Length: 344
Image 1 (cartoon, rainbow, N blue to C red):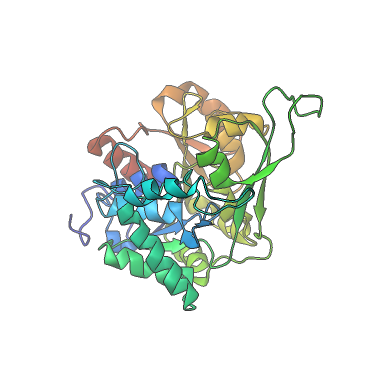
Image 2 (cartoon, rainbow, N blue to C red):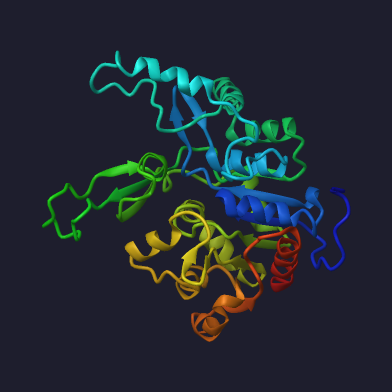
């Protein structure tokens, strides 16, 4: 793919910044590369679900996006590397019988492939040397020959924390289980397979953190800002929780467009629809519109939800009806092109 030539029909001459996290954002960035020069694209990526396991610094959203843009992502899982092996994870099982009670050593609930480990080894070593996450992310992207610029939302620690509701508990404290247990996002998403209802989200460290200078500059200076079709609560929410980010986006709202990750009342991938309902938001494009209206002027919705266009508009955000399920490259490219057009 020629990073210097945009496909016919592109409507943006300058930089496009994409606020993103997870598989949906990765696929949108890949589609965007077919209609807009890659060297004029920057992704501002959620790091609220970053974690440390085995002493390694792991950035799942950054890595999923990097591997996708490099053409190395496992196409079936949507995460991890293609042709991956899992010998290291398998070898950890031998230590389960000797691990003392209460020890967190050698966890196996979070799979790390043998090739993927190399990325985490490198990131951890560089951070230990004093490099910023922004610097390390650029180095990893360069190693994978990714021309798009990828920026972590912050160089500080921000952790998405999820408060659970035990099964059978209505949240009033009258159930049989323990309600109020707070876990990290990865414990909720991977270890518990996002199967437990939630009652609250908290972005630990966000109020003390700041958007990285590069990320803030990208959001301020780009010709267009796109909010990718990512979970609005746990993928986009941590970015918005950083001081000043919402104010910055609101100030340039006319050139900000969002793509709904909810189609026909359901998330295309992950627990976004259930989380929205559990946390008091309407799990529909109308609920997404309500969340994004303060910072975006347009919301791209799938034709399945065209009947809700007036309700979306009533929330103060302009609906743009466009097929948004990126089932093939043509649909994906048309989505990217329509999204850019909606903000210009």
